[in-house]
Amino acid sequence: MFRRDAFGRFDPDDFVTAIGTPSRRQLLGGLAASGLLLAAAPVRAQRLWANPVFAADPFSLGIASGDPAEDGFVIWTKLAPEPLAEHGGMPMRAVEVAWEVAEDEGFARVVQRGTALARPELGHAVHVEVAGLQPDRFYVYRFACGGVRSPMGRARTFPMAGAVVEAMRFGVLGCQRYEDGFFTAFRHVAEERFDFVYHYGDYIYEYRTIRPGDRQLPVARVMPGDPDEIYALSDYRRRYALYKLDPDLQAAHASAPWLVSFDDHEIDNNWASAISEEAGVPPEIFALRRAAGFQAWYEHMPLRRSALPNGPSIQAYRRFRYGDLARIEVLDTRQFRSDQPCGDGWQTGCAEALAPERTMLGAAQEAWLREGLRLPPPRWTVLAQQVMMMRLDSAPEAGTTRYHMDKWDGAVAARRRLFDALGEAGVANTVVLTGDIHQNWAGELKADFDDAGSATVGVEFVATSISSGGDGAPMTRAGRVVLQKNPHIRYFNNQRGYLRHLVGRERWQADYRLLDRVSEKGAGVTTAASFVVEAGRPGLRPA
Image 1 (cartoon, rainbow, N blue to C red):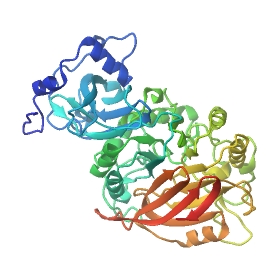
Image 2: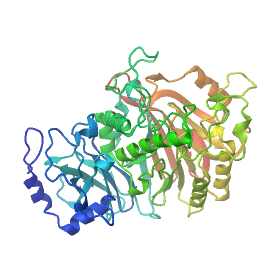
Image 3: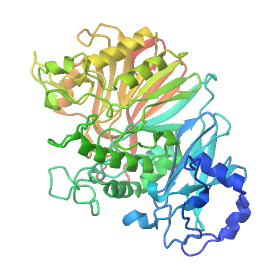
Image 4: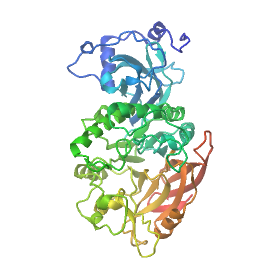
C-alpha cells in the first residue's frame, strides 16, 4: 500500500519498492520512449531537481493520452503545482517523472514503466511515446513525481492495420470558450468511455477576457486574470492552464485517447498561413505569435515528438488506421491555406473564391492526402478536419447567394480537387468530420452542388461546440433559411454538445448528443437526432 500525507503525497520509498529502482538502461529507455532524450546529450547534461518537494499537487492540469497506434500511444502530463503562477510554480530545472502502464486499474499487472524528463523548455510537459503493447486493447496509466501520484488515465491501442474489425465507437467535439458556459459536455463524454475522441480545435480562445456587461450574450463564468488578448508564450500557457483546470475537461481526457487538431483560436481568429486577422501585422511578426501558440498547444496536448514545433511551423496532419474498418486522415486547414478571399466573412458574388490556385491544404498536404487515398481501401475513409466542407448558402433572398470565405466555400477549386481525388482513387464510404461553426449540421457532399441529383461524394457531420455561443436553441431563423436553400443539408441545430459515432462494417450512425443549457452546471444530455450512412450507398437517412 502507498502511504499518503496531508497533501496526498505518498512515501517515495513505497513507490521505489513498487516499481523497482530503474537501471541506467531502463532510465535511458524511458527517456527515449518519451521522445525527450537527445542522442548526444546524457541525462547529466541538464541540471536536475533531484528531490522535488511540492506544496501542492503537481498534476493539477490532469493527465491525457493520444495518437494511438497498434502497439502504443502517447501519455501526457505537465507539472504545475501552482498552475496560474509563473512557470506553473516550477523551478527552472528538469525533473524526472515516473510513469507506468498496466492492464488493470489496480496496477497489479504493470506491463511497462520508466521515467521521463519534464523540461523547463517545454513548460515541464511530459510526452511519453509508449510502444511494444498488444493491439486493440485498453490499458491504464499514471505518473508520479516528488512523492505524489497522478490520477489514473485510460488509453488504448488501435487494431493492427488490415485486421478485420467489426466496430468502433468514438466522439467528436471542440470549441470550448470559457466564458460562454460550463464544460458539462466533457463529463458526459467521459461517461461514454469511447474508443477514442477527435478534438477538431479551438481548445482555447485567444480573445480578451469577457466580463459581465461587455456583450449581450451572458457570461456564464468569469475567467480570472488575463484581461487582454494573448500573444506571448507565457500568455498562452496561462490560458491553457485556466482551461485545463476544469475537472470535466480533465475527466474527458482521462477517459480515452484523443486525436487532436487545432483550428484558429489556438493562435488568432481566422488566421491563414502567414497572415494574421489583424490588419497591418507583418508576416515575420505574426510568425512569432504562431511560434508561441504552437509551442503552448504542443506542451498541453498528447502529441508525438514528430509534432514538436519548429518555430512558427508544426507537423499536424497525420494518418491513423483502425484495422481494416477505417483510415482517419487528420487534416490541417490553417497552416497552408490561401488567405480568405474578398476580405473574409460572409460574401456575395466573390469571384476570387473561384480562382484555380486557391488552396485549403497546400500543395504538399494535398499530395500527401492523394497518395493516402490510393492505399488499400478501408471500409470507411474518414477526413477529420476543421471548417465546413459542403456548400452553405445563407442568403435569405431568393436568387442571391452568400458564402463564408473562411470555409471551403472560399476555396472552391481546392474542394473540387479533393472530390476528384476521391473519385480517381475509387474511394467509397467517405465521412467528413468537422467543427468550428458552433452548430450541428448533417449533409451530403455533392459532385455538383447546383444539381441536387448529382452524385454524392460523401457525407459530412458537423459537431457543435462544447460551450462557445452559450445555451443556444434548437432552431434559428438563419437555420430555416439554410435548410430551405441547401437541399443537400439535412439537419441543423444550435445547441451545445458533442457527436457520438457508432461505426460497423455495414452501417455508420451519428448521434447528436445535446445539452439544454451550459449556462449552469449539471445539465443532462439527450440524443436530439441520429443519422445513418449505409456502406456502399452514399447518402444520409434518419436512424
